[in-house]
Picture 1 (cartoon, rainbow, N blue to C red):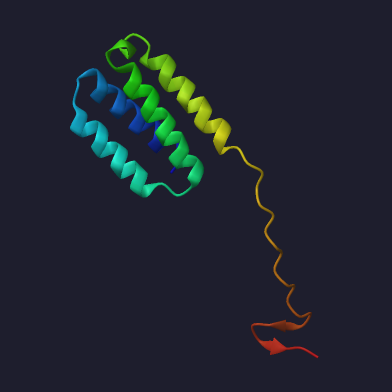
Picture 2 (tube, rainbow, N blue to C red):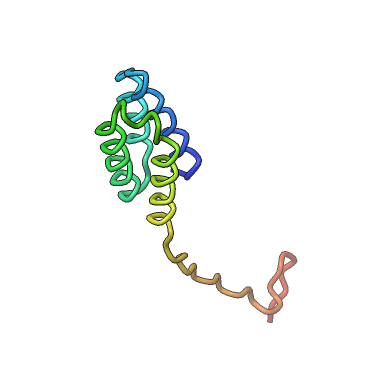
Length: 102
């Protein structure tokens, strides 16, 4: 899951909570939960869902702050050192597409 998808789902869930459409909330939550690739994403999804669902109607005034805070949390949890990939073996000195070699 990339950050754009996460922020889009947060906005959809926030609007659904404000308009009290529970089926949209649980539907987007289920779709995002089924398509999550990492354990950090699932934990972040549960935390975000709990925060948004607990605040409910009181988040109408503060939804931009909540979205920005959860986005920063997602960026913070998404930062990890890049894995070093093993370098491929170098080709033989004279072995190319046309054969050769010694």
